[in-house]
Length: 232
Length: 232
DNA sequence: GAATGTCTTTGTCCGGGCGCAAATAAAGGT
DNA sequence: ACCTTTATTTGCGCCCGGACAAAGACATTC
Image (cartoon, rainbow over all chains, first blue to last red; front, side, top):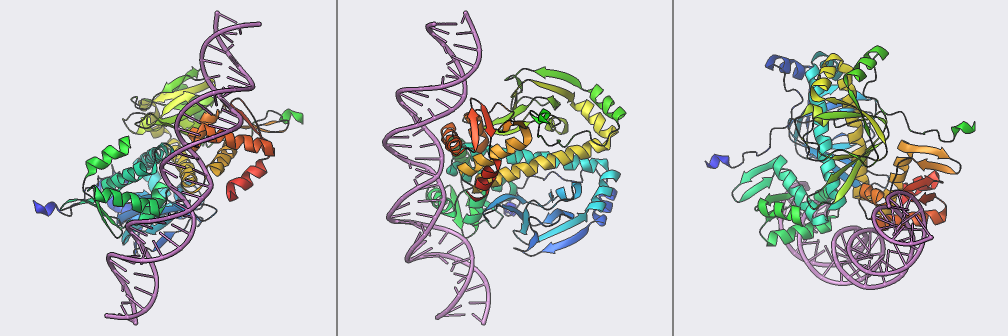
């Protein structure tokens, strides 16, 4: 029973290659090249010409975006089973974001012609990609709503809950977010400052809602967080 | 030459049915049903079961989203040539947003089976839809960055510029935004309050950057706005 | 284990921008 | 023309949350 400890709670990601037979799947993966990234290594930078798209096999990518003044926002974290930089395939543009490994990460990548071939060969892939894009759009719309209408506390609560769902692992007294998350990261994700995040989280720690360490957060009372996120 | 006045500056929207022959296009449009909406009429509400997707032929839809407390954010305006509610086709879910006609609007709509048929019959459609979804994702990421990193003034400037690009028509002394936009609308779009928007715009009016009336805005000095948006 | 670098906490200050109230202006209805 | 409704402006007070400083906690390296 305690083998549960460490089990990932991650909901099965919407896969790009659903609906293929194992044989087809093997072929598709064969067409791609694998790549391994150390933590904190950059995969591509915002503005680089976009040539490949990437499937995360293990690990996690952090997607960030900079404005003209060099201020940063975290667009999202890409986990196992998720595909990113599909823009590269559909348009001859540049990457709109920067991708950095948040932890050691294994990828499979395809260049534009390869992915185009696959999409024509297996139309389901295009449909899956569309479905994934719409899902992400949906999530971002939700976050946009939150940042427009809610205050910092609530947004931080929601972020922790979102991270928990996406990358939570059970530990003795709660659920640990299995991404190295600094206060600054959370601030960049929620559109505030690391100071405010720090204060907010210490407050919650005193109330027993979370336990936090250096770049690590354990949610001990998810229910309280949900309650807080919804009512302020 | 002065016939230019009133000409839309709208950049040609990325179309859902590019790459089809005129005959095929006619067939596709035949498969859909047309619908006409009066201004302020609702097309669907957030939470309604999603059954149709819609192509705007004329007019404009306003997509909004509510949070638990009933606060609203404007996700985007959908103009001629653009398709919305593709989610309806790809997933058996509910509409994630509310759609309301911002002006009198003509639509063509397809239900899930019809659109599914089309996607299978003309694979290019799926690719176009994917491309459009990625484009919208890109735009929303950009706005997310802005709302995370920039202050209210700048965001309002950027919004006006964005509306100008999407729905600008030339008028004698500037470019008129051809959407009925109240201060409240702009506030909901940029994540602030109508008071702040009002103050900001009157300030700009005094500087001669814009001319504004009731639910109407004319940008008279786009360059100044761009400058301001980028440097604060 | 000393030194260095990074992350985090906490205090203080203060200003951008929100909330509210009240006045004004514009459109529409009868 | 009058009344009603809805949009906009403006003044004022206040507070959330940003800016900055300084110190503490934790890792890593040599």
